[in-house]
Length: 439
Ligand code: SF4
Image 1: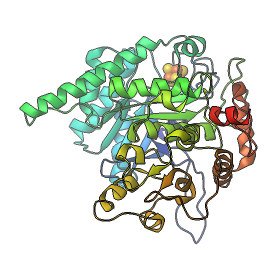
Image 2: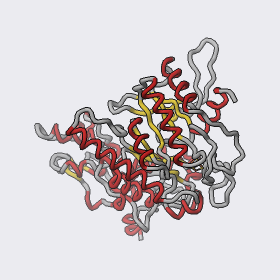
Image 3: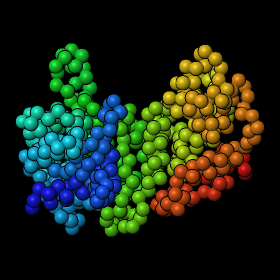
Image 4: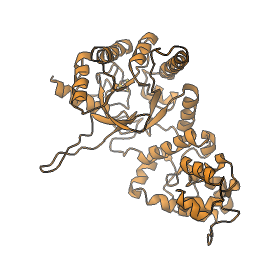
């Protein structure tokens, strides 16, 4: 098999991993125009300074000894298999880097022979790159669950970011669909990486030249929509992972059906992209807005309303906490107002030290009044001419959201495992406060 054939198979097999952003576009070049794009091979990540960097996204091999039912590389799947040697992959990476195609490498792998053997292949590839070629570009590597601790430690010394994919949100789902994996075998390397990162930070304080361990931290990926786990289950797990393992990011990957299995959505089912989007929004609320998972969802309402973003959903359900007076409210409460983001809340805090703010002033500093107007007062007054009830707020928020999405895509999002039906504008599903009032 030629290197090009291997590259085609192993970049295509890597496209399902979303722990960085794939281009996702296939576009041929045209005479008289510049450039072309392929949907696999190159992905993008963001450096700590916000710069977008291109990475070669590839698997070491797709020949897996495991049989995870949701995965295209599973042992029982009849698909073309390939494997790079460490030297081949290092040469390829350096070749692309020298031609300026990429700025780094995103390396993952199926489990070939054993987790230890696979981990050794990854280590050898990175060793050639870092020590023989002196490669100082960005590397993100997937840790292999079940590999020996010493091997994982060596891997972490050669890479910038490590990740262990948690894959499915519950142990029950893992048992059903990935019987070779256990929650323990996934969380153990995560804990090890978290400890090593912390130790390296402490050592750095005392010894300036101490070697760094995964200085860009660790992340994980969860598949959404392959199993009946609810948004609430996923969000609580996410919250726990951030707290316990200090993860930089949890990535959500809408499940693309790749196998005929009665336990999985059938082939042809559209990936639940809107649900994935809502989870990313909620994840943002956990990390930057001071929300807890149990505030956003609960046992009675375990799924996000598809047409209202999670922050608006929370606000409509907690009208007793509004309106918020813009000129005096604590910063933490400003962050909870729909239409006010972190930057706007900071600007409000800075400006109101000098003079009080009115609605025009808020617009100038970037507040989205279309959403915020229902939840705020300026110097004790609501926006002039504004008349609303909780029901009309919900209708307005839904109609605003509907403009952002192709509504015809929404039913597929909701058909899995009886998540709430597509609401009409007066639907109060997921809004217990409103439901009670209507009753
Ligand atoms: S171990 Fe990874 S590559 Fe192998 S079948 Fe499971 S998910 Fe796929």
